[in-house]
Length: 305
Ligand code: CAA
Ligand code: NAD
Image 1 (cartoon, protein in one colour):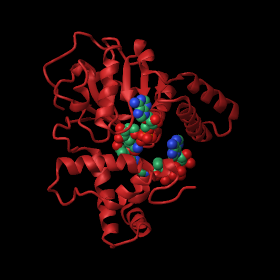
Image 2 (image 1 turned 120 degrees about the vertical axis):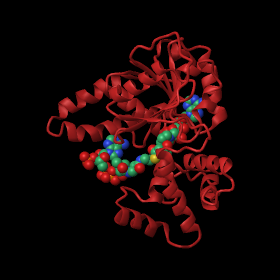
Image 3 (image 1 turned 180 degrees about the horizontal axis):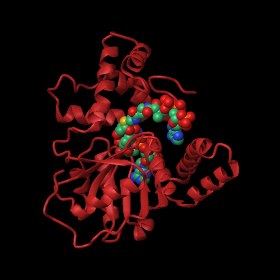
Image 4 (image 1 turned 45 degrees about the vertical axis):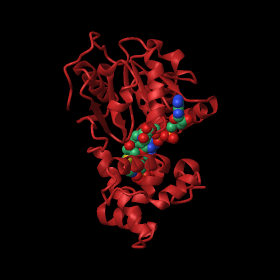
């Protein structure tokens, strides 16, 4: 981990109150896990309708958890869900809710300018002790943090989809992230019941951590398919039955979201244009242009309706 000399004068207490911006697949999943582990959570998105869908998604996921945990005790299960949901409140106005928060965790669209705009605005209203973190898949944390004046209290917390099931969290420090902040983010990840790993700052913009490996195979699979070497169904079957992957590469891309996958791929292409492995995919671009983002919109490489 590359961490610099700068450090905040403010010592961070344990993170108890969390504001999560973005109530999509990742934000809702993180909110669920944080609420389940006793944190007070405010989930923020752009409108009430999306937030209602987020809350419904959290309840649906909790029901799957309860089915196992309280298999023969339905009343205790219902009580568990009610208790977790009581820890979550919703808002469409981030600036008005960050006043008492220990951590602002962002899981909005994978777009640098939009993320910078959000953090730049919240930096002016959030308390001094509040840590900011991004769940970005591929953008350099340093670039996102540059929109704020709290570089020492800024880091990356990279969760994996589906958050309630995936145990890993990558904790990312930049050269300006203070040791206190980094330790708080590690402690928070553990308090969520996750296993954190420390990651080097993504200074080059090309990630050399899990996301690189997770997406390398799916991106190569798209190329194989585009060149006519195999159908998506056969490639998915081959990777599941021959390599033991829980999902095939096309299923995984649909699950992650093709919009997010395209943002990741475009970023890699831009940073490493000469690399033959990092070339744009016509097929992916076409699906995204048609609004086919995968499971979340009902169609991507496959149909889900
Ligand atoms: N909430 C609660 N429980 C869930 C759940 C959710 N969202 N999703 C799955 N589960 C539970 C199910 O209830 C089920 O429990 P039981 O076995 O006790 O019945 C269990 O998980 C298995 O689910 P399924 O039987 O439905 O399906 P599965 O065996 O295929 O498992 C999976 C589902 C865990 C998602 C598995 O397919 C998997 O691990 N897929 C790969 C996921 C992956 O690679 N994620 C990383 C994506 S990349 C990323 O996140 C980073 C980025 O920046 C883009
Ligand atoms: P998503 O499309 O499911 O959800 C994004 C949510 O953010 C939407 O509900 C949208 O309305 C909301 N939003 C957009 N701009 C906003 C703003 N300015 N203020 C408040 N809300 C806003 O996306 P996702 O899959 O949850 O991904 C979110 C972030 O997490 C991205 O940065 C992505 O790269 C990262 N990530 C995604 C995955 C994955 O597998 N999908 C895994 C790890 C990290």
